[in-house]
Amino acid sequence: MTATSERYCLHCGMDSQRVRRCGYGGCRPEDGGLPVVADPHGLDPGSILNGKYLVGRVLGHGAFGITYVGVHRDVGLRVAIKEFLPTNIAARSKDQRSVVCRTGVLKADYQVGVESFLNEARTLARLNGAKNVVQVRDFFTENNTAYVVMEFVTGRNVQEWLESVDGPLERDDVLWLADELLQGLAAIHAAGVLHRDIKPTNLMVTPEPSRGLRIIDFGTARSFAGASAAAMTRFVTDGYSAPEQYSRDVQGPGADLYAAAATLITLATGVVPPAVPERMISDSGPTLRAVARRLGQARAEAIGAAWSIDPSARPASAADFRAALNSAIGSETDEGSDRSLVLWLVAGAGIIGLMCVVLLFILLGGSK
Image (tube, rainbow, N blue to C red; front, side, top):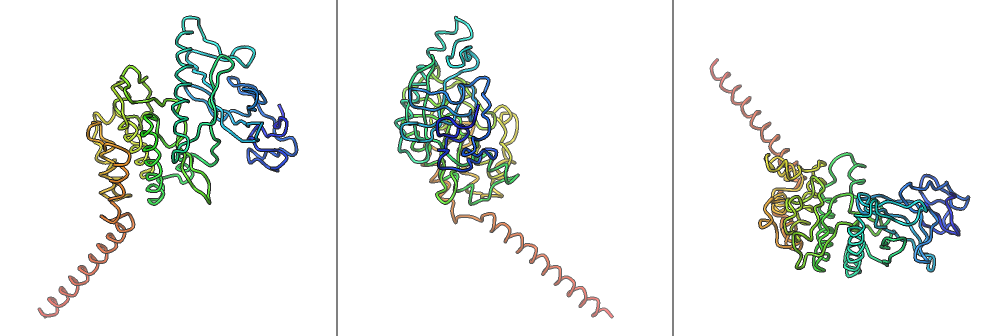
């Protein structure tokens, strides 16, 4: 299939009459662009949903669905379209549009999943306008499944940023991300929602000059007000998920704070922290000492509290976690000051060594 449908590039969703190069692999919409390869599990590029959304290439797959680049044709707005397609119980039908259950006995489970997907879309729509949270534009049912239309976020995710520097991020960048992430989580929790999958790949950084953060991928999000443990399906990402997510215990905002702390550890050290099962049998001290070397002891302690195995030992809220990090400013040596301390120690050692040489020379001279 060609890269353009009507007037929009199916790679990036941009207006082919206004953009010369979309940036996707050298695609040039004005010349017809690069062919779009249909995804074997996805909708055909160029499909129309709800009479107004043009479907482009697949942006990514997850356990619960597929995300596409899309365009709202009525207003020419680029969007991201998420389709509910849980691959463990459903698949694309032969017509390449409808979604069907793999077996009849799973039909009831599938319908529950569709309704849950829509309920979460309704919940997330309440977050529209919240700081640092991806915005929901629309949601509807079609093709025997459900769709959520969200703002299209340009930029790169934090994992890509981390990989581009091949190591930990700069201290100021880690602290900026921490502040933006915790402000976003405060807004999410205020609406009674748990994200449940905070990690570097689910944090998008928009480009300069208006750099900002967007928390994305709410595919596993749940309302926590009055929720029981049974309502919380087991979903974990090793290295980031809290202990209660492994056991399906009752989950609250502390689960997201644990994941936020684990994310900050990754950004500060360049290494994903140990998963919960490993932490149960090993010492977490070396991990937090590595954080302290980069961010300072007080900040490491604040992160360590949020990273606690015991939910009751974590901060009560994202605002409290943020306040603990901010209160550490100026209260201790930072990475630059640590280097200065090392230089002072080296200089001091040199002076002491010189004094010893002089004293030895005097003693030896006095014995002649």
